Length: 280
Image (cartoon, rainbow, N blue to C red; front, side, top):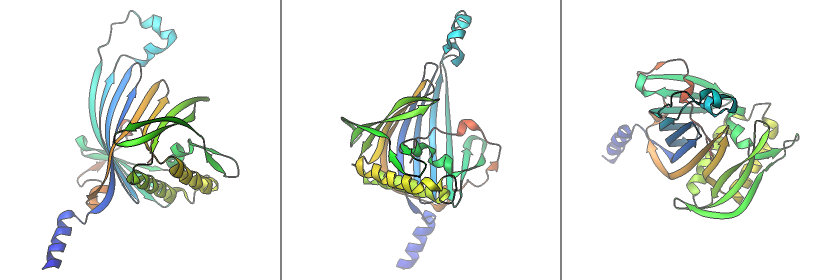
């Protein structure tokens, strides 16, 4: 009887699997554009899924911000702010040698498929490191004494100098050691990436150094709960709101039944700063 109850429970759950769910908010602001994105990131070994909703507000044309265009456009009719709400999903399968990304378009019952090379996955993390030609890497971080509470976590501010268009600009990361679950999520993310890139000849020379630097960052600082990153005249702020363990059906990481494949739609690609996620 107990076995029957267990079998019925498993069937009802769709043979569920445990995952880590990270909920975060991402805000990007510039003089002509503003977006607010709420993200649910589900993480498991071999899989990730992002479910998001975004409100975008456009305030005129970006051309109007260019000095040589300001005089030409000063007499143009004033444009009222335009707002738009969009939703989407992104599923990533991490396989040996490649990552397959599925962008899901619920309103059209369609999806597009894209394969990513390993070096694209680790690019964000490598921005935090200084690596020499021998593959020796060390974190390029400037810890500060500034501390504050973000949500329920005590966090410390760390400055990272990021190269943007040949110019170094500061990005600000707030790290915490208070969440073991966030630390576990970071390790799952790194394990997924390593599965893809371990045989990539252009990346493999740096893997050992990158893994050692990753562990050093975890030991010294912990995990990122907030980041502030300047990008091409705009600023993106990403904040972790909650992290917990949940169960999902195994089919959760598959393209929904009845969806047809279509060509990629670039606006579906969400900004990612994985743990600073994008990593994580």
